[in-house]
Image (tube, rainbow, N blue to C red):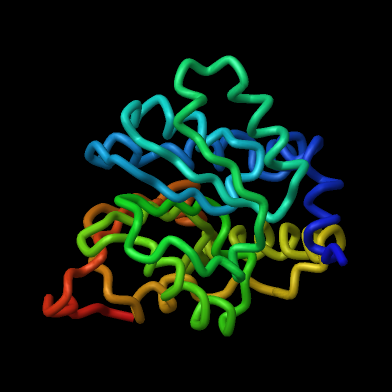
Length: 228
């Protein structure tokens, strides 16, 4: 039995870029690739929920020696990724896998790089507490986690604008895909509970979006102190 989320994203797939541009212009497109130049050469990468594959395409070009596994629950999204990259000279470096990432149990300590863009915001706080450690477990010790996602601006007109944008987005995806969230979960708090250290961070779109590059700590390394 296919989930409402899976069928919803299948239905949205062909129009996803249009709706994204309508809501956010080119801001999400620019944010996805903001820190790709900060990622050193990697041999293997796992990409979670890249939708129509624009980040996957950019990652493939910036990491020509990297073997990439792209996981998405939507078969139609994966088909669009494959169509996008059908003529890419490095297409053979990609493996596509249809699966709900919450059921991803393989790949322990297998990848040099984990990538998620506008993916973590799709989950509840409980989901992140439960599954984020498992996703990070796909990384080798010392591996890198590149995450791009929304965050709530802290004050002033930016916070008001951000709440309006995020509320509209969540209502839309709740309608289309049965998204459980009514508001953005505290992604930073969830990340701060994990054994990772932040290497680079860049806020964009009036502090509504943040791109971060983390390193998974090796066994015995002390976790850095963090401010909530």
